[in-house]
Image (cartoon, rainbow, N blue to C red; front, side):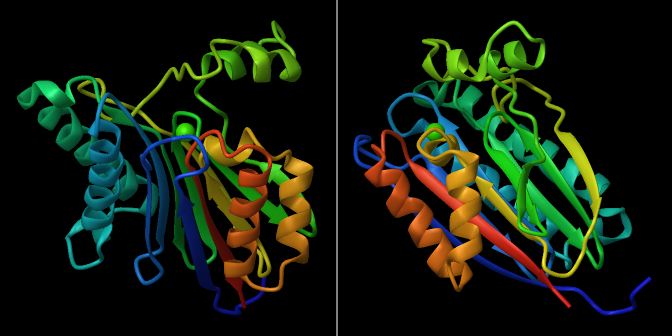
Length: 247
Ligand code: CA
């Protein structure tokens, strides 16, 4: 096994898109703490923005290495941070009728040296590009994708379905929530993409793979993904966060 130290580089872009009046997506990261996350909020008026930004702030705050969760293994610490974010959103929605029912998706990459974990709730996705091929690691918690996994619906039908916006798990809408957790051993050169459905509804995995391949920097790749999603319609807010592991 190589003893090379892995370090991580990151870049992110969020964009309102071309149709929505506001941007309810949020992202945040700390290379130092090994945490990177993207959230897609939902709820009436400004509630979606409140939910997604609250989730990002709470999770980063709880995973700050000065904050006491450092003794836990990263996935346990992340689960606790997610649980704290869930409580914060749920409590705020209970107290303020205008925010009632707000919630958010979440996809997070947590790293410690050569280990990484992807955690997700809802239909924001985590992908990994390794040796030139892009793989969706997370499974969408959405009604239509669950039907696809059960073999009851095709991908094409899922994309057209009037129920395609229905997610089956969200952060902050119930008094507790459980993320899916995917554990991986990192190889130098691995690239992770965390993104909202405003990207993946507009571009195919092949389009995304090509952009991650060809753009020279992480910033260029983020900008190109957003620009291409807008050219394809930009029906929703678009967020992408790219992380590269380097030896
Ligand atoms: Ca969205």
